[in-house]
Image (cartoon, rainbow, N blue to C red; front, side, top):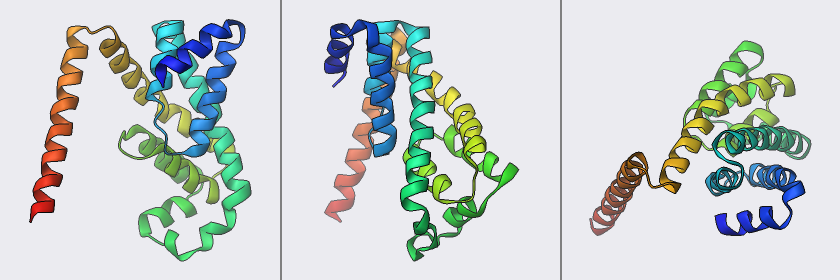
Amino acid sequence: MEEQVIALFHTYPSIAFLISIAINIVISILGVVPSVFLTAANLAVFGFWQGTFLSFIGEAVGAIVSFLLYRKGFRKLSETKWLSDPKVKRLLEAEGTEAFSLVLSLRLLPFVPSGLVTFVAAIGRMSLLLFLVASSLGKLPALLLEAYSVYQVMNWTWQGKVISTVFAVFLFLFTWKKVVQNKT
């Protein structure tokens, strides 16, 4: 996928940054597609700092668009039973400083799906401005870490080799655990 995006950027260089932001908006709306391939394409075409900045802007704009669409289309879902989990309910009912802190902390955690945080915040009571600030502040360190890791792997530095090795070991252990659980 990364190669197709890079080719698209090279085909339309004058609007490549707009294409990147548009792709990020689609990724944000879908909520489950990882953006790492787009970050890699941004880094490959625009360089580390410009590519990272572009990815950040794209993710921030994507989060805003998703928030607005989710709020408009799914607000009534906040009253459904499947959103009655106490942790989800806390974010749904949060306002002001509490809402800001929850979104910020959830954005800092790499294993919490970004789309889920946006969805729950959108159908809850949180304001758009508070969401924008908390979401962007929380995404910044996560995106810097992602960009650094992707850049190191793309350039196959010793750090990239360590990152790849740790990732491979993690996948192996995860797969092994699943196989062993399925046998019992």
